[in-house]
Length: 211
Image (cartoon, rainbow, N blue to C red):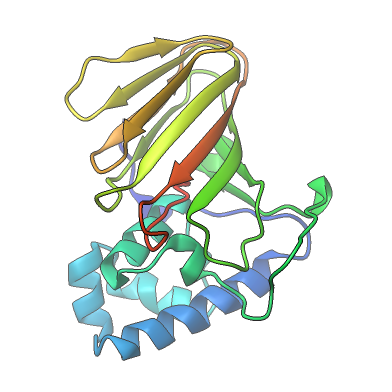
């Protein structure tokens, strides 16, 4: 069942939320001005309320995966580019306890980024945990974006656009164009786990998301 993205909250590993919120806010403000857009205009294009955009720009609110994706699409950048922190590069080790974690629906859907958030990526890999009976809905991504979901444990139902639902179990995988609304439903009474790979053909549009 679809929910209002503006009501969701993002959770990150300890010590990261304030830093990431500040980076996203600064990047959003700079990109919006670069495109010559007012908050009202960006709100109209992205479908994210002016009030929420203002809170994100000032670092008072941390956006969710879906919210980041909608804003990034409106500004014609990748999600990774929207939260990029200049100066990173080369070989990067991402300790498990310091990885960026993005959650929505009070923890019903949780993504752990397996790549550094500081650099735009043409390929983004996430470890995904979906709570019991949880149904997560994703807005369409820009044309050319694909998602590849590989189930590690649990029983998932994946629906892409108007297609019939596909049921996936341990070891199953699905690759699909992510430019239409899609949803992941955990059919079981325990957490379901999967790896999610997001790709974009030019490396300029990606989501996370969230994925």
